[in-house]
Image 1 (cartoon, rainbow, N blue to C red):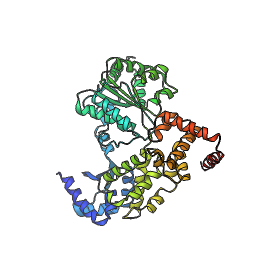
Image 2 (image 1 turned 180 degrees about the horizontal axis):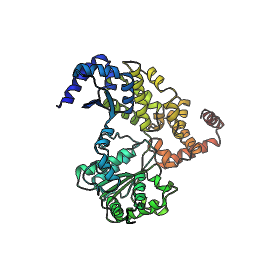
Image 3 (image 1 turned 60 degrees about the vertical axis):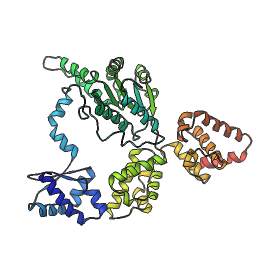
Image 4 (image 1 turned 45 degrees about the vertical axis):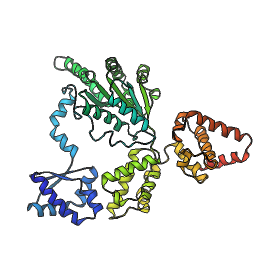
Length: 455
């Protein structure tokens, strides 16, 4: 243990006596002392920590640190990413000029986030197929599902899965891996137009091709943004062909399926469909609760949040994982700011009032229809998605499926997935049943009108 660690451990032991366990875990547990010199440089996990510690607890920190060291130090709060950026400034500059060469056998050189792995990817019905195919590709890159095209709304875990594939390959093979966003690809390509003093760019052209074509696995995120760069599309077309012809693995993500990428060339969209297309859907209730419990465990808040509160947050925020985790963070921060030892449903409701619910819980039309139909028949949304066939649940399910088809632009397969991964033929059957019933049942017509008014 070095001197800085010893000083900070003493500091934390004193600070811990000044706070509740919730307050200490939130603001101090994940900090550490980077250096002591003209100032005390303290590394914190988030921007919120920088702001809150600097504005609220600056005097207290200086006082306790003085007690430990016998010296007054000016404080500087920094993020770990800022430390790394400073230490590797020259290296980053070289990489930006494409002088780094081919990234290989290192998650840093491959631009991978080591925190995104298969082990910490939370699996549920909405993403199970995507996770399984991603793992299959990671185990056999270039041999199965090439290219792998992962699509779905923002915040559902596409990027996590792509990094997981890359990290698995780096850890278990000597294959050369590169992760980039489509913006990075475009920026690198545009850099080829900057010529040297001799009006040539041969070195940069060679470096570009070496970076993107002399690899075993290319992972490119948010391919939809390539739609605004026609010349870059041309270059990516040739890059794709070179890698594919040499049986190198290509992994692509987008917010839409290849067919719905309006601004991309047809020849690119065709190639994206050569392998396997995998959709990630919004998390169902069980997966949302599973995600929350996992995040709580990592935040050391398990003893403060009951199952009822987890259920409440899961039901409040349904659209994507990022907003779900953001809602939990907000609730925990709210409890900390107001020194609440126990997080209750009332506190969670107050913390999320006017924010998450309005922003996220009704963004999916099918989800909204499910909720209104479930409320009308005094059952739960999970009942509608379940395999239960009793009449009190089966008939409302038919109605919800019928309305989802009538009031949204979603396809039969997508509707089926939202109702417990049912086959598209089951969805069609439900719609036909309600249509036939409407021909003779006036009461059903009135019920549908009432539900539509609630919607």
